Image (cartoon, rainbow, N blue to C red; front, side, top):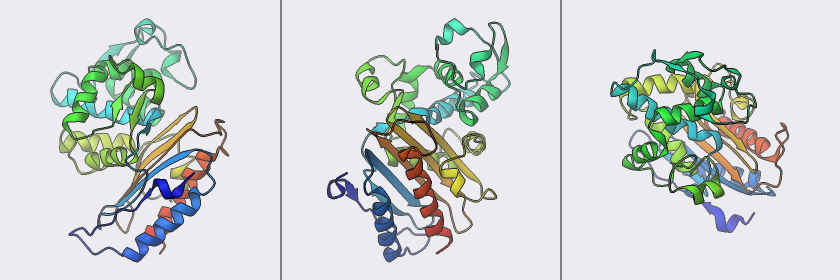
Length: 293
């Protein structure tokens, strides 16, 4: 990986408190050391919210979202709830043919029989907590489809984050990025939007944030953060890409980060996949930098 081509460091001072430029420079150096020799492309974005200090590596480059695309779907469902079209207690009836997704994997919803019912609240839990793809496709449709979700993203200023799956006129993007696409910066800032109560409404944002703090897949970035610390996150993994977006409610102040890879030569789903190792190492580094310095 050509570090000279990919690196940018963004640093500015927020109004809340003064930032330590030397500390940011060290964080940049430490991240670059972790990226050395990685077999693929990597994007990293980190922001310490109280000081507004940012560090980025390829933070504005487009990467596959994999299952992180479920966060925009979550937001648009809550937008529908806010508008009265749905409620958390709304009951929907499962029809396998309407979802039309043959891959079962670990999806609980794939084991449903036609005619079984489920609430929107439980579907959201399946999609976010367990990353159930059947629930995601069903909720994407209930949210109004990819065009509607992408319209919300565009209106909120997200230039690159888009749903590609089952979305008209995005077939070419689907071939490149799969279900969705984003940049490390944009996916991180979407979590910040939710955290700050600016996604749909403060009440809806609070409910979304609660969903994002209940994650079953906690073996990577979350494994490097003490279990007593609240964390909102979403993970992704597909073929040559591994990804995770995390907002940590740390004692010394919130920080958010997003790590995404693409074009990995290591496509295994084992714990020692190169992308998974990188995510764990960067998460550990950030906790030590912000909390143990």
